[in-house]
Amino acid sequence: MIINLLSDTITKPTKDMLEAMFNAEVGDDVFNADPTVKQLQEKIAILFGKEDALFFPSGSMANQAAIKLHTQSGDQLICDKWAHVYNFEGGGAAANSGVSSALIDGNRGMFIAEQVEELINDPNNIHVAKSRLVSIENTTNKGGGACWDINEVKRIKQVCDAYSLSFHLDGARLFNALVAKNENPKQYGELFDTISICLSKGLGCPIGSVLLGTKEHIKKALRIRKLFGGAMRQVGYLAAAGIYALDNHVERLAEDHSKAKKIAEALKDSPAIRKVEPVETNIIIFYTEDNVNETIFINKLKEQGILLSDMGQGKLRMVTHLDFTNEMLNVLINKIENLKF
Figure 1 (tube, rainbow, N blue to C red):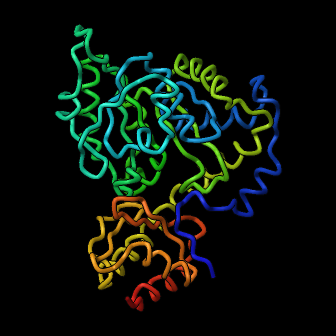
Figure 2 (figure 1 turned 180 degrees about the vertical axis):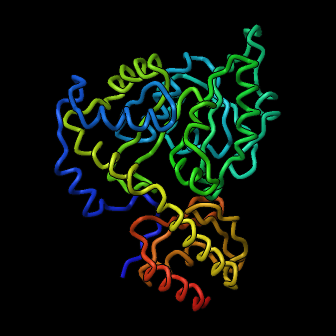
Figure 3 (figure 1 turned 90 degrees about the vertical axis):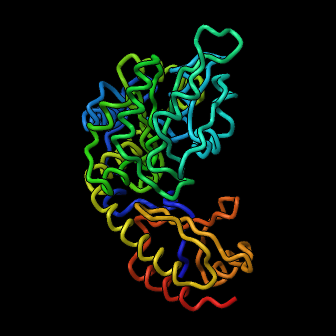
């Protein structure tokens, strides 16, 4: 048995999702003629109370399109030092949009309104980049699936409004946060200018993300997607997976969260583990004891059929997901309890 906890991106479509994909009505989306893509875009826009949405092949492309539509070359993006848009999107903000990034030293990938305000440059000072966009990530990947306090998000929104800054949400795992915090999508739709939603993580789709915003935002994003090489043809087969996931895979995210918490408890009891970050959703971040080499730890579990990832800086990560069964959970906990170093 292979227990793959490298990411929640490794899932395969369920039988029912595959059937929905197989039966999808499709057209050429480059000509805005794929009815299933239109259905997905309209469905998720309504869900979040936004005017429009656009289907993308990846979350990174959706985020980078958002950055480009909100900024001009030479502008400044404000985000956390652990933000995905800064760390894991290939330097896209600089390469694609020509923007510099002002990094906030937050807590587990999250920060407060005062920290944003401290980094905003004087728009009349020609010697510095013009602050234009604030981006947050919910849940935070490097922060261990941590969920933002929506009241703090509201305070950051007030700062953005006061300084005429755009506000983007990298919502790669936003549905995990919504389920964990019992929040409503429209609460986030009201706060952000644009939101990217990943369908291929906890929701279990094989590919795809959606960018939400105003009709004007999406009109601009359509051209940017083309510029980035992201225009697709009969992509309704993939959009059908997204529609199925929104209808069937949201509430079940609570199961992933429960399993992650059980894994965290087992790790806390292991003499090989020094620290486990608090677990709110489906990501477990932990650190080995000083006398336990993390590479050896990973390889020892790999020998037993358990795959996890090294995030650097001593961080090890496990991510629960749709294909991680109760049987796998029991096997994993047993192996953690019997690890010898």
